[in-house]
Image (cartoon, rainbow, N blue to C red; front, side):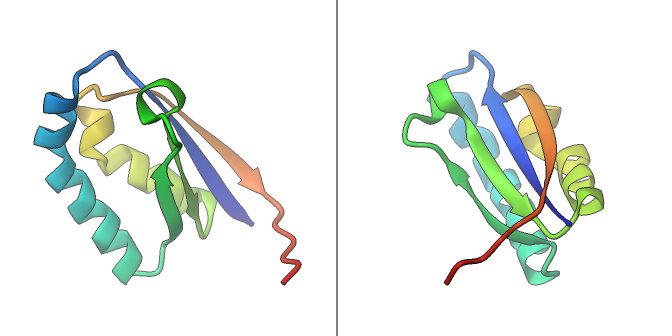
Length: 90
């Protein structure tokens, strides 16, 4: 079963986000190479609405959150994991 992670952004400025972003991006790249993550990105207004990622399973989602510099350094105020029963229509 896939897992979707929702991030709520804390009250930090873009300067702090951009300072931490390269380390976050490296983690995303590592998970992508290992085929643990399917998609990730921000909503249209990331400061207000946050972001989400779709992972191959809950264990990989939990591992990502544990390692993510955005979480460790306080950019993410809250991370929520929801298991997802996907139905592809294409």
